[in-house]
Length: 183
Image 1 (cartoon, rainbow, N blue to C red):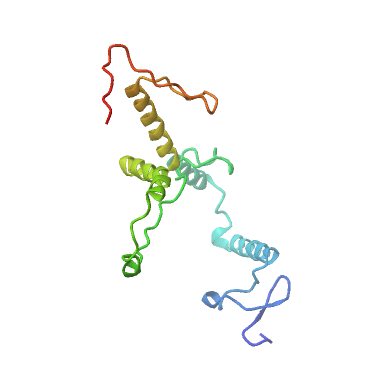
Image 2 (cartoon, helix red, strand yellow):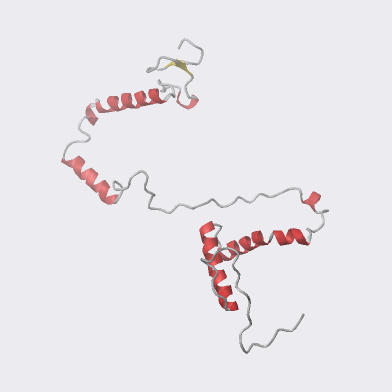
């Protein structure tokens, strides 16, 4: 090492500072070409050892590979663009953050009625999420659709799904139903 704390890369011959966790072994810098050269050199070194010369040859190696394939069915059939067999969440759960400014906010007055009315969609989402136990958008949408259908069945209205925006079905009382009293 000619530069203090630096080492010369075996591939590009530039000086680099080795990773402190691997100072004794690191001989290549972190450039992609040098990392590929490091990988190729380590594979050559491994294959030239006498114990590893026939690692991929012979009937016992065929049996080893066959046993591994039996233990991992479908592994080789999956392509890179194909999703894995385990479902992945669509979104992460929110991390609850505790605020320590309760003293400052205790002096504030309750929000105005207009603010509460504008928060209704958020409250509805929170209610559906707590009922289903899930914060995933797909679960909330499916539950909302079920609740919409149930509410329309209760009111005996046809479903607006598939109709153009702005089309409203007038509320007509059922025949034989008593008129509602004024409140």
